[in-house]
Length: 182
Ligand SMILES: [Fe+2]
Image (tube, rainbow, N blue to C red; front, top):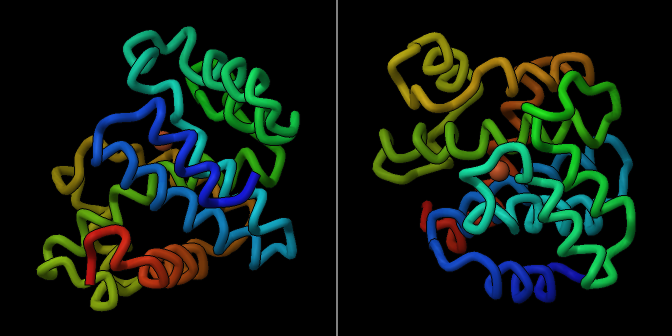
């Protein structure tokens, strides 16, 4: 399944624009991390797009979120690597993590909204967000309070935090039009 097909599948199960934007942003960052690690960027981006596919149906039941998504994707014939990553991303059921993909998805999932919030402060300009901005804003507990800082920190066993912020910002900037940023 390619990116466009994944977006069509997501659209069949997710009506909310903000949830779709979250999935696209998370996927773009995951793609950037895959590139940095020499992993399969197309595959990781598809995983990011699909990771919350069951959220509208099961997001209110964190004992099923992820598991139901994986079941849906198995029914669609997605590779098991995709299904397992989607299943395991529910940190309430599967943390702590040790695999590179799991850790990367945790960090991408939790920093995507945070970076969009940082861009909003700058009039929507993701290109004006820097790793320094991110470090400063992460320390302000009231800023994007719903963002779980400890899940962003999952990336710390893979790379230096500043490098991760740089990759994540550049990844969002690469798809800024699609994300409603500039
Ligand atoms: Fe998510």
